[in-house]
Image (cartoon, rainbow, N blue to C red):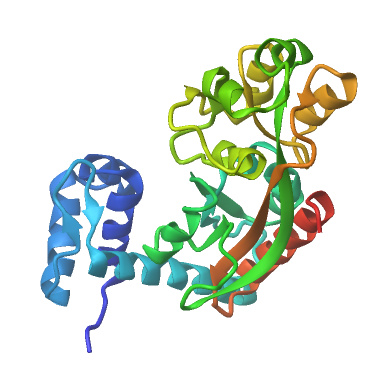
Length: 301
């Protein structure tokens, strides 16, 4: 059995969190060589290499488990001090959360604003596609994530949040120019499409549904800015998949006739789930209740 020195473990965590020994030294208010010694000492105590000496340093498999353990202990400590410390000036607790970019740009802040006013919590948000956020849980980088994965991961529990619908939208002028006969295979090969990034395949899913196949070559704009995604389409520059459930800007443009649905009967439904560590943490439980409750009021059931 190893007696873990949490001062050393904190150094490991901060190096990974800040992306380097020099930045970690500034956060910990010690010298960079002192940070390196603490990490090296922890590796000697555990008999494991915990960091790859790359730029930025990355945790090894064992290092990820150590970081996950450290973050869980911090949450449990927050519960302990909440019970015994009656001072109103309690320390802030950092919550590392994996969130998909669409949730972050639409409903997430509305869901968590009241909670952050009531609790001394700092969010450390890592943004990733909803199909990949669960990997952040698996590596121990976050204690909770919004994901499209329904099954709970080992050591975690899951709650259903709701769903969003993504439709293929364009301006009426764009539709008349590029899709005069509707969404046909030939038109889909020539028309410019707007895509968030190379992990975004929602346009392929809807075209598969409409046409039965996806064009081998497509004209794609990559535009990783969700808050201006509908604006790009509204300028008549491309067609693209938009969230018509939680994106108020997009919904207003549809209602005003600025945008139109190119295939109303064909859309992509994304179901979202909240994954969290299966810890007996009161603070984490309150965070989760607030998130789940608000999301279910905003998203489709």
